[in-house]
Length: 81
Image (cartoon, rainbow, N blue to C red; front, side, top):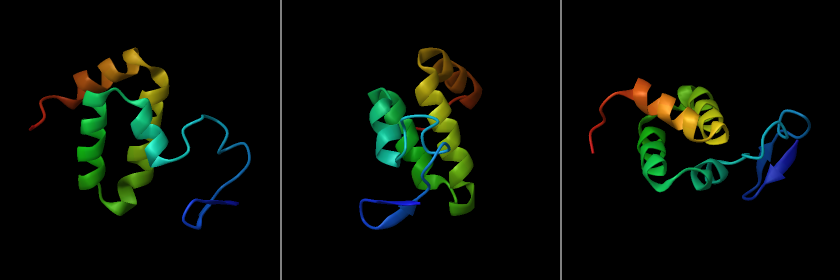
C-alpha cells in the first residue's frame, strides 16, 4: 500500500496501474464538463457501500471515451437538472 495525499492508504501494484485514473479527482478531470456534472450528482447521492461499483463504472466510462459515454447516457435515461 502507498499513501495518497491526506494520509489515506491506497493499494499499490498491478491493480492500481491497470488504468491511469487513481483518484476521484482523476476521474472527474478526465470527463467532459457535462459528464462531470452527472458524475458529481451521482457521487453526492451514492451510498458508501455502493461507491466502489459506482467509481469503477465511471472509470470504465472515462477510459472508454465517447462510445462509452454515449452508452451510459442511453442507459441512464432522463435526469433531473
